[in-house]
Image (tube, rainbow, N blue to C red; front, side, top):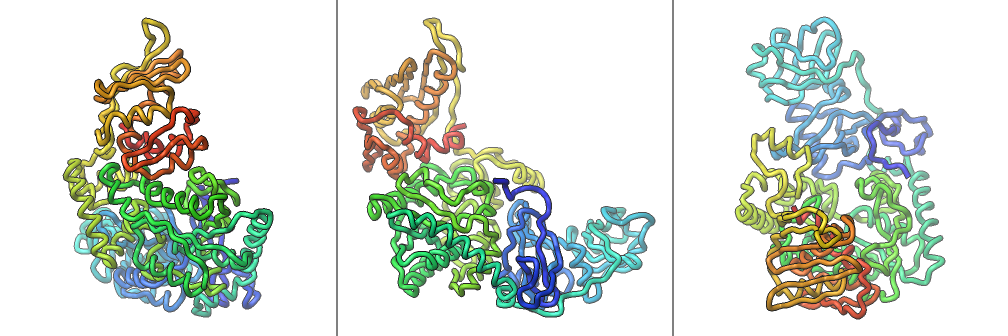
Length: 629
């Protein structure tokens, strides 16, 4: 399967007669052949709802004093790459601009596209500049101030502009503030140029019109998804559950499940970090639709573990295992000991990680759960169209301009959404901000590391390094809360034969050394002295010595085996001290050799086969490369 995340353009269609997006070739309302327009890949279009409409209109009003061309027309958004939220704005089947959330200004900014400039050229009350055009082409050029004939309204450097050049209309950007315009050598940047005018659709449509124009398309999506689910569950006796997060995708899956099944159960994971609106919505939805709801509760797990792991990050989402997988595995084990088929709303357009998902997946962390992904190929606009088509009640947070519904402090949420959270729930955001500022002080990263969102990565990606340079901030390239692992001696030949590798891990001691020996049982046969805090683990021809001070010495018959033993021993050391007591390791142990107690796991070495399944499932070992520097 090819990934949708590739450079290029994606074609959509628009009916100018009915004024709506058409997902097929022809409009199902009037039968007209629709007009093509193109957006940036992957083209996961979604509707702009509620407060989001006000934000978009407000930006055009702020810069041009007019948003007449939008009127009551529906606005579509298309996500494109950026440092935070970046969306192409589609009105009337045309990209009129780009809305971007600036981490520098902590606010939304607008980039004008040529079709937006054409719409506004006659009605703009400000942000419009007339120039004496220089010879040659204009696109991409910088215009000096002595070419400016007239400028309407004041503007700042970086603001979008409409530029009139003879019979040409241009989309532009201010290189300098308006009061420096005439004296600057590079006063205005020209983005794009057009000679022609532009006409809008004859009708201002609404979302009902969109559904009518695409009813056969939406019905076809439903039929195919229903057929997929029916073909699988019809051959199984396992009970069916629906993972119901309170988001739009799981809501669409509810509509599919209702068409297939007489009985299924809604399964909600309360991570302890859910929005109050989501919890209320899920409970009300269950009651109104008279369908059983079972809930897995993480309680205070996040707050109990954040001191050990530090803030979760986009590349270090330990919280998902602790707050989602752990309670989910416990719930499924207790309610569905023989297993369950779970319908989930995973879509390939959501992220790179989900781009390759299949209809049937086995949960690698919950062995007795089979996952079905019936809407995996749907775009966001398909999901919304289906929700309206089946008149399903959705989470009210979408009207607050949230793109995704999840944990309120998730590092993967947008800074724009975090700003909305601060407004909606100051107590929730206040508790997290208080922790982050305390953590910043303890690790010495500075308040700017928090205020500009650098904490959301263990290792900063290029776009955040560029932001730091732009802000002239000196921030660490990697978070300061990583555990140091210093190699005293790399892999080298031993005098007695074989190879050895030696290092020191600065691991915080939170449990007795006996727990280190306990976790080493998953690596091999263990002998240890609690008095001298030394453990010896042996697996085949490889051995390792681990000392209470963090020293690890591994030996093996060849370099590869020595390195593998070294890493396995360090991971066991980490697991012993940073264990989140989530229980996932025990549930993944086919030999039933692990029992999780309050102070961490214990291992029955008579049963343990050293298969490594527990290590693969462990949140600490999974993020070994992020925890250890």
